[in-house]
Length: 348
Image (spheres, rainbow, N blue to C red):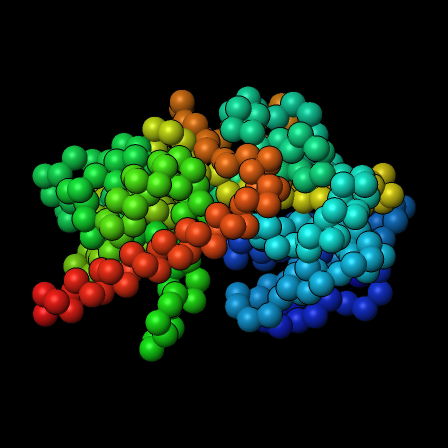
């Protein structure tokens, strides 16, 4: 077995056929790689087949997953892919030629909790398997919010009294006109949920975009830039100023960003030890503890009581309209920022 070793920023995939290429959110990577190494070492010690696995540890810069969207031949594609990326792991030709033909399958076990099924996270085509979600919630700076009503739903973020008091994930390099990155998943979900008019009002309420990792550090302090931060539950939960902040699980449901996998159908049985580990109890325990609720079968969801999840749906994600909607929300966001900057200059 090739060891599951950390790979530095910019590391390329090992040469030759790769059984598993696995990218996870940064806080999960090292522990997941260690657990997988121990699991596969036990598998080999019991006479099982060795696997070639690669879990890149880079926190920036090029990633081995960047080249996947250029691949045309499944022989050049990892036999199993675990990803936290949204929409850019397959190019359109590869998807239409191979995914639609059944060359890949989800490995999704039956028996997941109803809250995940109700959100539509189980792929009806059986191509993509969701093994966990990163729920996006609100972290409210109650001191800065003052006497204004505490938001309880995503729709509340469009209310006029929250002008300049909403922040979601993004950043831009100094001197650049546009943001280098922004949470387009949040923007797309809000456009679909709120409709064009309320979505425009929400954009007018956005103050500064903030890196998600910074939000729990500044919420409830004098450096806070907003009253309401939109961020993953895993980060909202570590904010230490519980007397000045409050985590809100929106009434419509937390936005469920999927952590997913797909397996080449021809290798599904061979890779069963890896697939089973991904959906197994030990991995689910680790994910649940870190506020990434797992879809392991026959398991109570690690969610607040009565909590719901919100997901745009597989039909929408795969529809060509999603790509044009993405360009549209980015354009709307940029126009909103330009308008806000003009207003600030006029006031100055």
